Length: 231
Image (cartoon, rainbow, N blue to C red; front, side):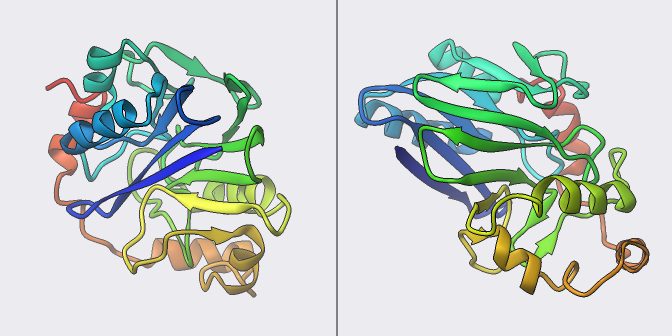
């Protein structure tokens, strides 16, 4: 499998480009508008044809590149069925399979960070890996205090949907703020300080007590992302 990981320094966002190999169809996950030119350069140099662009949820800290990528490549833009971004070309339900030639991604509804968050699990065509958006981070979890977030649903999504995967499943989040690039389900079960050794009630109390400031771009990013980044 061809795999590329991009990093946006302004928002600490990871974007992922996947394909069966050079010269094949490709999918991109959580693209950032300001970096679309870089993605298109990689797509051209690897002789790929972008057929899907996915946002795991409506981001609050950057503007998505979905709309610009659709304009440039005629790809299908995709989000979960609970998303209020009516501009997307396709909405998926929990358990749906997204096929890109030999590569298959299974859609997992994992609310908690937002009420429309999805994760995407590689089922075929590549290593065991899950793209968790902001629900499960590396040694952390996504905040739960806006956009329909809920700490109880976050705990349930992480424990029932994600930590139930095989220990060696690779974890690729949409953000990291400390330099981590990849983890595994087993590592997060044992070493994630918000999860390991805590009960559901303890996690809920922890998340409700964070008192984090709003993301700097929240007022710009959310309405822009509901329009697929086409401001």
